[in-house]
Amino acid sequence: MQNLKIKDIFNQVLNGASTGIVIGLIPSAILGALTRSWLSTPGVLADFAGSIQAFQFAVPFLVGLFAALQLNMKGMETAALAGAAFLGSGAARLVDGAWALKGTGDLINTIITVFIAAIFIKLYNNRWQSLNIVVLPLLGGILPGFIGRLILPLVSQLTLLLGQGIAHLTEIQPLIMAILIAIAFAIIIVTPLSSVAIAYAVSISGLAAGAANLGIVAVVFTFLYASSRVNSNGITFSLLFAGPKLFMANYLQNLKMTLPIVINAGVVGLFGYLFNIQGTTESAGFGITGLSGPINAYYFMDDNAVVNILVLCLTYVVVPLAISIITHQTFTRMGVYDESIYVYHAPEH
View 1 (cartoon, one colour):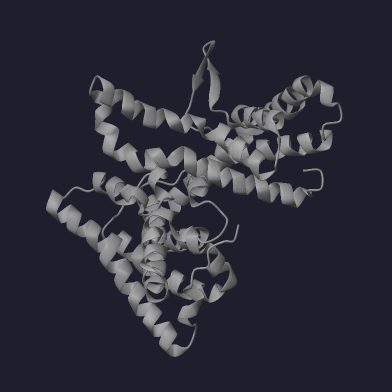
View 2 (cartoon, one colour):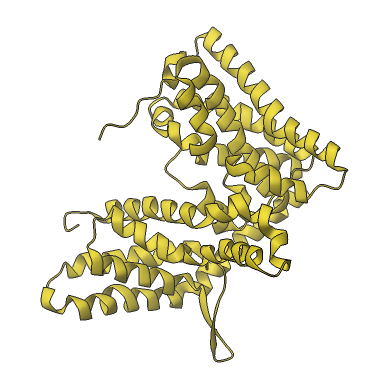
């Protein structure tokens, strides 16, 4: 780790944070909506549903853990970094003399705290190895965690204002914002950035969350159809589970893909507005993975079950697939790009 530059550390922290956030939140995103009603049922089902919710509390630790793994840290360094992440997240708060957990905490502040802790650990660089068991928890854990708690009110306020700003714009310009948010998350999902982390960071919900979710779905079908033309069925089918990030390398090497992605996401976002597709912060960044988006959207619908399911099929399958076919056929025939840019190349180990 001693040879890493500040920029490298920041990038590794972001990569680790993205993984930790997804792992910590995906059980709730996939099963949370299905098991929500079990919480009111006494017995083992309620315990299982509660476990799904409680797993989210581990997100700050997981962010620290995976950031440490990205930075090739050793055991005690990893433990210190994870501890700092938990402190800086603000997930644990002292209320009336007793400590209480409050969700995942502030994820932006968690990432800032992990970055500070990583810098401290890098600067220390195991100078006194015989004292590591004492120095690392203090220098790499408590001190950056304390700094994180000091800046938490400011960061949380900025995060809240950002979320409120998006919500306000969605209320006064719902059509434009639905399209823009769908496009934004469609682009985010094919970059190293975490759509889940960003959704939680700005706490989007309602129509904005539905649009974000549909934007990701649009990318899934963009790649799904294009992949079916040039890749094996296994690669194409895996997109439904691995998500668009499976083709991130293809996208970054062929930015022409942005054209169909933007058009497809914009059209699907428009239909999301027309049918008032809504979502939650938990579902916003996951797309169609585990049917998280459609299931959460269903709970916001007022019509009868048959109509609701038909609307979901239209917005989550028919429209994304149809527009993906149209744009792909149009751009390949116009010579804007060749189908070969969607050929998947497995990473070499």
